[in-house]
Each structure stands twice: as C-alpha cells, then as structure tokens.
Amino acid sequence: MDKGNSIKVYCRDLNLYGQAVCVELDANNEPEDGKSIIFVNGLLPGESGLVTVIDARKNYRVATLIRRNNDSPDRVKMPCPIAGDCGGCQIQALSYPAGLGWKENNLRQTLRRIGEVELEDKIRPIIGADQPFTHYRNKVVYPVGGSNSEPQLGFYRARSHDLLTTPVCLIEPHAGSRLRILMAELMKKHGIFVYDEEIHEGDLHFVTLRVAPETALEDEPIEQMVILTSRTEKDPYFALAEDLLQEPGLVSVYLNIQTKPGNVILGDKFILLGGEEKLSFTLDGSKFSLSPGAFFQINYEQTIKLYRLIAKLIKAIHLENNLSAIIDLYCGVGSIGLYVLNELRKDETSSLPHLLGIEIVEQAVTDAKGNAELNGWDETDYDFIHADAADSLEYIREADSEKTLVIVDPPRKGLDREVVSTLAEHGPSHLLYVSCNPATLARDLKQLTKKYKVDLVQPVDMFPWTTHIEMLTLLSRK
Image (spheres, rainbow, N blue to C red):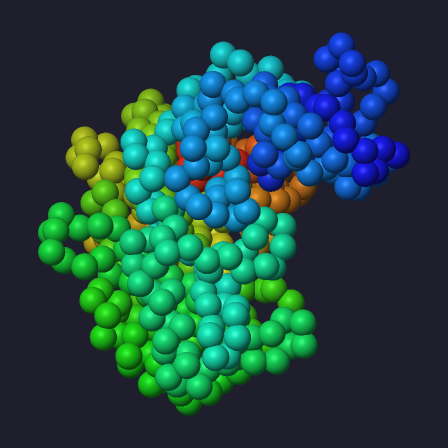
C-alpha cells in the first residue's frame, strides 16, 4: 500500500528511536482518515515534509524523507557530523530544553496510557544536565570493524551493525577519541584481528572504556579501565595491554572472552592483563570500587543529583519513622544504599537503619561488600546477599513494615510479577522505585497503586540527547 509513492506528512511526535511519528496529509493539509501512521527519520514535532514509503505493514508504514517543508523553532544544528546516522544521540536535532520537554511529556503519556494512573500533580519538572555536552558518559562500548590491515573503532549506525567513525564523540569520555586511534595501531602492531560476526572468525569484537569521575586536581589524569572483548585468548593481548598502560591515567586492562556468535558484549570470563583489579573513585563523598563487569549509572553529574534526592527523601522518612531497616533490591555494587547510609551518618542525633542489599550478580555482591568496607562500615551495619530478588521476598514479608523502607532499582524489564505482588501485599510503609524505563514503571505502578499512593515522580535526564530517561518514584501506603 502506497509503497514507492511520495506522500506529504505531518510529524506529531517522536518514538523511542527518535523517528518522527507522522500522519499523512490530504490536498488540504488535513490528516487522511483511515491511513496508518508513518515512521520517518529527519522530522521533528510540528514539521511537515514529503516522504517516500519504503515499507508498508498492517498498522504502520516506514518512509524516507525527500524534503522538509518547514523547520520547527526547536530545531538546532546538530554539532556532531554523524548524529543523523549514529544510534547514540537520537534527538540531537532538538534543542536541549525542547528535548527535556519531550521526555517529560512522554513520561506523562506513558504513565497515563499503560499505568492508567493520573499523576499530573505528582510529576516534578525533569532535572536536566547543567552542561549536556560534557563527554558525560563514564562508560562506552566501541564495536571493532574495518579490516585487519585497517581496523577501526567507532559506533553503530542506528538499528544496524554498520560502523561509523568520527574524530570526537561529544558524549564519549574525553579519553575515548585517543583510545580509538591507539587501539587500531596496537591491533596491527600485535597481530590482533578484527572479529567478523558474519562468519564468526577473528579476535577483537568490542573495546569498553570506563572512566572515574574528574578530580579537583587539574593536572591529574582521569583514571581509566579498558576491557577487550575477544573470541580468543591470545598471548599478544598481554603485550598490547602493556602498551596501553603507558597511557596517562589508564590503570587497568582486562580481556573478556565471549565465544558465542552474535552481538553479546561481555562473556563470563575476565582475565586481568595488567594494572589494577578494580576502578576506584570517590563520588560526592562516597567511595566505590568497580570490577570490570559491574553496573554503575552512566552519568556521574546526574547520578549525584539523583542520589542526593534519594538521600534527602529517606532522611525525612527516617526522622519521622525512625527506620530500623533499608532493603535494597537489585542493589548492584551497593551504590544507592551505601550513599544513603553515608548521608544519614552525618546526622549523629539518630540511630542508623540496617542495610540489606540483594543482588543476583555474584561479583557485584563482592564489590558491594568491598565498598561498604571502603566507606568505613562495620559488618554489623549491613548485609549483601547473592540472590534473585524474586527468591528473597521473605525478607520483605518478615520485615517490620512501619520501620522498613524498600528501594528497588530493577533492569529495564522492571519488577518480576512476584516481586510486585509481594510489595503490594506485604510491602513497607515507604517504597522508592528507581527506573530507566517509563513503560515498565507504568506497568508496575498500575499494580502497586492498588495499595500505595504515589507521592512524587522525579524524572532525571541521565542520558542527554537520547530518548532515554531515569525516574525516581516515591510511594507510601494508603
């Protein structure tokens, strides 16, 4: 239907890929009745254009843009030369204030459509970044491509595995541009081959860069960890790592073995090629040390804002209720729970709650225990348990609900059904839900709000220039 035809369209919204969601216009520039929506790259809300349909499905069509007829007042010149093709910054053509507005509006619509909850007066204005183009990512994964004679490290084209390169990415760590050039040189020097995912041959598939926060000392380089994801174990990797460790600030190099075909970034086996075992740093007064596979929020500046708000809310609840326990489900390396305890410790007038962290990744639990020690906590102050959240619900059922606060920070898939039902039936007086997915947050709130009321929803722009968002939701028993 209409495939190959030129059609005039009007952009009403963007989807999560940054594509324009368009309606077809008739000769009078009115929406055509009975026509499916059209997805196209290159238009912003309020803009119209001429497109060619390249794929037609039952409920939607996909098109390419021939001509944009007008410019939105929110359109800006994209500072990155590959932003229109790269899958990293989906909304770089949208001014930063307009992008924040889109994210906040998308959150409201999602909560209303999926969660069936009206929270207009509970959703706070989004917390944006002070300087969104500050190379804010503290972790980036570079796919390796090109040829064995001319390897390249770069970025995937949107919704493909085509490799794109650019001298500087505005959201990668500062050290990233230098690392991409250096790694290509070292691969040739040490005979490390480019992995070919089509035939499952070669060596190096991904290079991951992790960096610590900036320090107050201007001349002190930011500490970095590099993880090389390879199909093979080869001795030349040790010599390559020795060369990498000559770079200022680079303190750790790991080899990760990933033998399965496909695009999985990390396997289970890590080999320390040289340097420190962990990447250690201080964030807003709290100390953390991370293993190569550990999860941490991607944006230090925005993480501080989020964690400060969490600590402020929990401190107020603690002062009113004299909490005896904080249960941190999906606790990872313990960053939220330990940050909160560190902040509560500053007030010496009240006793501190016991922290119980539950995490399914065993190495993360080891990191969490080490981080507790780094921050000066006695073993009686905390417990970190290696377990699946759904298998640990007896801790919630047996807790003193009036004296317990639960923090949940699940992956994008949200809470398991059993976790939601247990929280609804046996959960504490207060619940803090940290989410990176409005859809699964809305789904879970639909069930939780049968027994809880939402006190606030605070969106945080953890991922500037993308369609993604972080949210903090505070709930209390009805």
